[in-house]
Image (cartoon, rainbow, N blue to C red):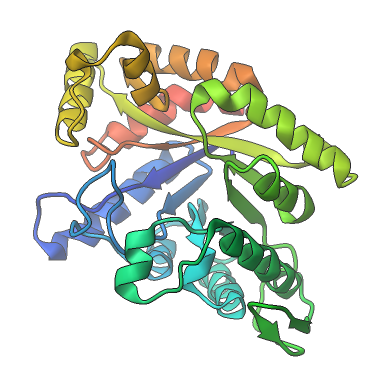
Length: 327
């Protein structure tokens, strides 16, 4: 497994009939595959997230959508970025991602995190619990999921989960990769050092040097060579051949979410847009290199929240960023 460039589909609000929604998703996935992306991902949410839209905007269930994408693509890896552990029994999740691997002929990646969106939990009846609870549940879940993905039949009796000699068949392989997503320098990074093949670091770009230093410390404590744990960063990209159009698109995207950059101080603007990369292909490539890759991150997931559904934009982003991460 190696993901140096991943494409995340963050929304399904395409101003089109519902029948046209999934064909638009498929078109993006195929365009990403053709443009050299290593992976395509969807969010594992049931409501749209704050910062991207209203809770009642369209949101597809992740593993059903990924299975549909699998049948329409050939080589690109498939993952949720990332699965909320609180939404599924861990043995069921291992079964779901293994089934996706079979459906896709060995292209599934298990992206997983502790879960955080309280509104979904409250309205859909999932137990939310405390921050400490959610990380304890994730730690237990990984003790079940990882062995199941590796061809073992674990027995586990914890505070949150119980399995007994649990079977996971069929499987194509015994090394289905695990991608952990999060920002916690102690708990999340320690779990990544123990279980993950890939760590998607969730933070502002300015925080990356500190985050990577902490990740290296957790790997050292676990007796793991840090270079064996691939890393990535999720970037929000607003790209167009016309830089003014890209900047206006970015401005309108923020305005629709209640953020007027013209009313913010310079420090507030920097903080509000620290994960945003805006402009022409050359502008975006330079920003990604200097603010993310030069910090030591191995690769990128990007989303194109404003215009990724428009034909040609995923291709433009792939051809812009691929050379930076693939060498």
